[in-house]
Image (cartoon, rainbow, N blue to C red; front, side, top):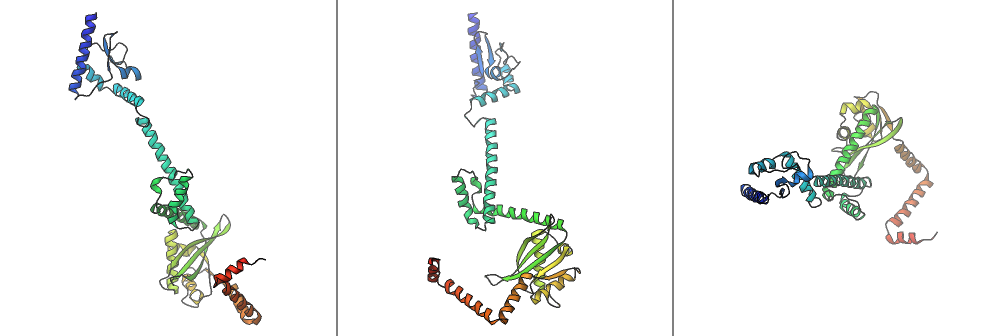
Length: 334
């Protein structure tokens, strides 16, 4: 018996050596020899699987044939057992399943960081702050323990967030405008610091039975005549809500403007041009503009009010044009 055991151990060692040579020096740490049972067996299969093969069961493999070892090595059961063994002995975070979970967690954190970064850019937009403050705002949140994601901490990403925020708001506004079916257009012109005429357009409609007024757009005018203003309004609706010219005109029931001749003149004014397509259009002279004109006319007719106006204007200029006078005013104790 002792001699047979020694022969089997020698054959087991020989099989291992042949296997190492055959598989380009790749070791088989799973191949073990059971001196008590005088057999070879797969330690991985015994530990991690209820394998019914000769290598995996308790009886073991006693033929000591290299072909049998090679067949066992390519079995799916052995491969599964080897993966289980590698995972149990791997360093933390390197096992396939654990690494997968870590990657999923990282992706979740990245999505969470994207949410925080998006909110930061949205806050700056709502507060009318420059996007160059975005990186500093994200850094502050990082110091407060919020993971904003390193890949999102740049001005370009803030601009991207702002763009998609604007697109979402535009789509929501366009849907509400189409659901309203009827609305009024309020517009006025102004000159910016670059001496460019700008046309401001608002839309007033019913939302849940309540009248609401929403800013549509501000459009630079190529030429501040009726044709240019109407073209600007058409472009505003198309760019901001994807509403075509015939669609917004068919749904418009009222239009509020100032008293400029280009808006409510006799022939080639804005209201007349739009009324050519919308016969039911009701033109409304802006109440705020009417009040302004009424006050100005009253001041001109009453000499005392003209003196009050001049007096108040002189006080304003006295302090606004002099930092010293403004400082002394602030130091005054009531």
